[in-house]
Length: 146
Image (spheres, rainbow, N blue to C red):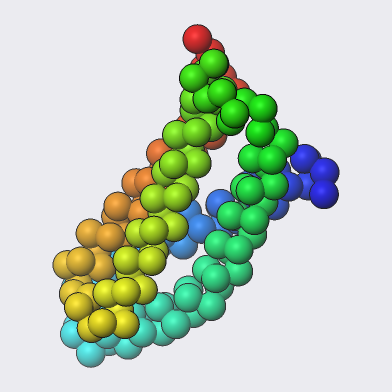
């Protein structure tokens, strides 16, 4: 695959991923109290079930394309402290790995029955903030130089 195709796939998948998290943390979280307990639980189940299906594919594309893009920049990644691009790309990858492991934590907590609404909100905010950091670093890679 060409760099351009990988880049577009990566960007679109990232938009879908961050958009989903934005809707969950900034929109749905604020309307749940207005819905009542039973409706809010139904909404959570429905959104959760649908987003798990969709996000599996989105995650596959964002990480798959990201790995492909990293291959194109393997020289910069071999010496990340040699310049701003390699350093910022390395930080971006580190945050992306953090997002991956944070989602793993969500899966573990859900399967073990230890997920609470407070943990769910905190983890989703943490993932959202990590994703915002990734976006900022992605832009900075091409505009910030030292």
